[in-house]
Image 1 (tube, rainbow, N blue to C red):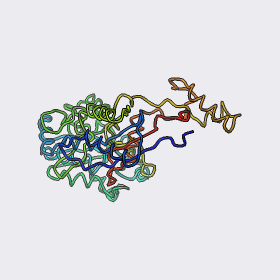
Image 2 (cartoon, one colour):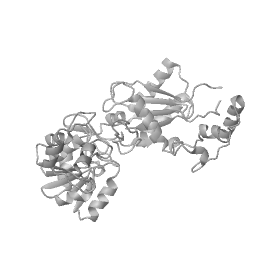
Image 3 (cartoon, rainbow, N blue to C red):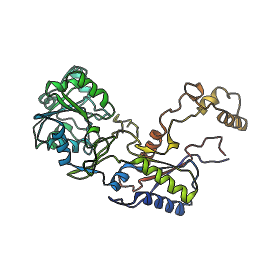
Length: 393
C-alpha cells in the first residue's frame, strides 16, 4: 500500500528577464530537479508557473505615461472619479500614480471599514462606537483625518488615505469613504470602477444612476497599441515593477501552458497538466484579508485542470455507512466506496464537507503558498499525487 499521497515541491529556476525562452527554462529547470531529486513524473502531475515569470519573459509592462495617455484618451473634462480600489502599495498605488499624471482632478472613493479583499481603511470598532452607519454615511476627507488619521494597516503599518494623497500629489485629489457606488456621482460623472471581483455590478449601478462615462481597470491598457497590454484584464492583476512602470498580468497564457505540456510529454512520455498561477484564493485568519488581488487565480491552464473535485468525505462514510467496521475490513470497504462513487456527487450527502471549488483555484492557492512572494526562488511548482485517492495503489 502506498504511504504518501500528495507531494509538492518548489522548483528553483534562473532569474527570468524579458525575451528569455520561458518554455525552455521551465522544462530544463524541471529536468534538473528530476535528475537531482530522483523524481519520477506520472500522468496527472501538475506543473504551476507563477504569472510574474510569464509576464516578465513577455516584457508585458506599461509605464505611467501610457496610463495617463489612456485616461486622457478615454475621459473628457477636468476631473475623474475612482471607486472602490483595493488598499495596496504595489497594486493600485501605481495605477493611481499613472491616473494622477493625466492632470485631472481625482475624486477617490474608498469603501469602509474594509476594501473589497478585506484590507481595513479604519477601525470597525470605532465606527460602531461613533454610531456611523456604513451603508449610508459618507465620511468626507476632513472627518476622516479628524477621527481616523491615526489608523494604520495591521500588516503594512500604512495609513492609505495619507499614502494615496502623497502618491497623487502631482494633481488635486479629494478622498471620501462611502459604500454606495453612486455616491461618486455627487462629485463627477466620469468614473473608473477600480474594484476587481465586483466591477461589473459597480459599473451597472453607476450607469443606472446617470454616470456619463464608466469603465473598469480591465478596460485600460487592454489594446495592442503599446508594447504592454492584456486583452482580457488590462490593468487588473498588475504589480509595481519600478518607480515608473507596472508589470501586467501575462497574456497568451493558453499557448504557453500547452507548449510546456507538449515539451514535458516529449521528454517524459507523461501527460502532465500545466497552469499559470497568481494570487491564491485564501483568507488570512488574523487580519481577515482575502488574498486574491488578481482577477483570477489562474489565467491559463491545460484542459485536464478544468472542473471541480468529485470526492466523498471519508470521515462521514466512516461514521455512517461503515460505522460497524474497523481495521482492514473498514479500509477495504472504504476503497470500494471510492471506486464505486457516482460520477457527479453534487448535493450528495457522501460529499458534504468537501470543497467543490475550481481545481485551478485550489491548486493555484497551493502553488502560491509554496512559492511565496519573497526570496524563495521557486517560481515553478511540481504537484504530484493530487488527483490520487485512497483506493489508488
